[in-house]
Amino acid sequence: MLAMTDAAAEAISALTAQDGQESAGLRFAVREENESGAQLALSIAPSPEEGDQVLGTDSGAKVFLEPQAATFLDDKVLDIQQDDQGQLNFAVMQQQEEA
Image (tube, one colour):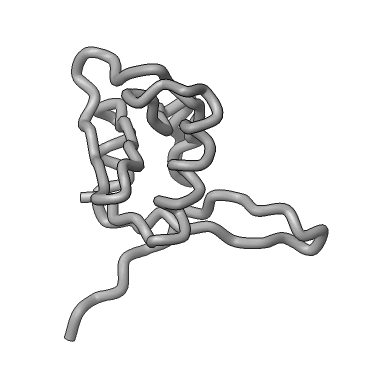
């Protein structure tokens, strides 16, 4: 299952709070899939679509995963990274194996 860092959860909560909708969340959907992986579409959604997997945190952050995206992201971690210009971006990384 997709894991989420505290920083990512805070960013999702901040983004969805701007809409003023308590049921809103960050939605992942597969836009295109090829040999090198999947291209994901990311959007703020007012609610999950039928068939979406819903992930939530204690802080209220919600992530909606379209079924194909849920399969692709099953062993990943959602985090926030800062680029060279200081912009914050969502990053999807491989989960660390627990020893």
